[in-house]
Length: 216
Image (cartoon, rainbow, N blue to C red; front, side):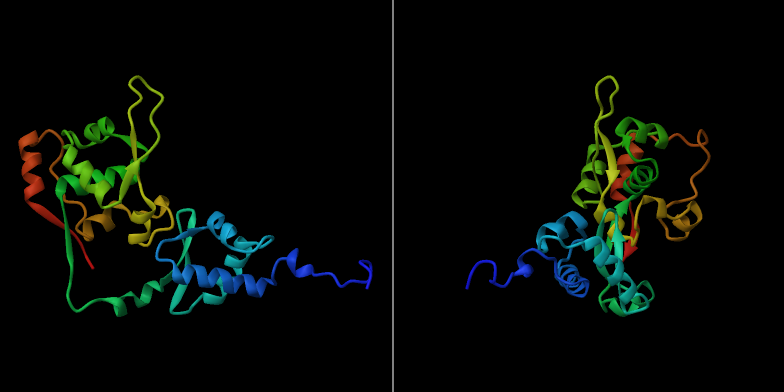
C-alpha cells in the first residue's frame, strides 16, 4: 500500500469531541481539591482542546444539581450547591478564632486591596502587630502583593484565592456589606474615632481576647 493510499490517523491531530472534553474537565475538577485555572486545564488536556468552552457547557449541565461548577478568582472548582451546605455540617463543630485586630486587618485588606501596612494602620488608627499579619498569611487568607512604586517601595497585601473559596466568593467584588459583616459577627459597633484612644498595649490584649470569626 502506498503512502497515498494509507489511511490517515486524524485522531493524532484533532481534538476530542466537546462531550469528551467536558468529561475530562469534570474528572480534573472532581479529583482536585484546589480550584484549577483554564491554563492548567489546557496543559493537562490533549492538544487542541478548549477547556473554557467545556467549562461553559459543564456549568449548564450542573446548573440546579447538588454540586455546581463555580468560579473562584481566575480558577474553577466543583463545590456543593450553596443551599445544600447544611448537609455537609459535622456533628462536632470546629471553631476557629481570630482576634479583633486580625478581623479588622482582614476586612481592610479585603475591601481596600492592594493595601500597605501603613495604610492598614492609618485606617485602623492603631499599629498593626507583625503577629497579626503573620497569622493571616499562615491561614492563607492574605498574601503579599506587588510593591508600591513609591519611596521605600512598600509591599502590599491582597486576599488569596483560598479566602474567596472559603467564603464562597467569585471575586472580591462579591464581599458583603457592613450590615452583613456585623450580623455575622465580623465587625463590632466601635465607638466613633476620638472617643476612646486605643493604645498598642490594648491592641495586643485583643490578640489574647479572641473574637469568634466563624464556625464550620
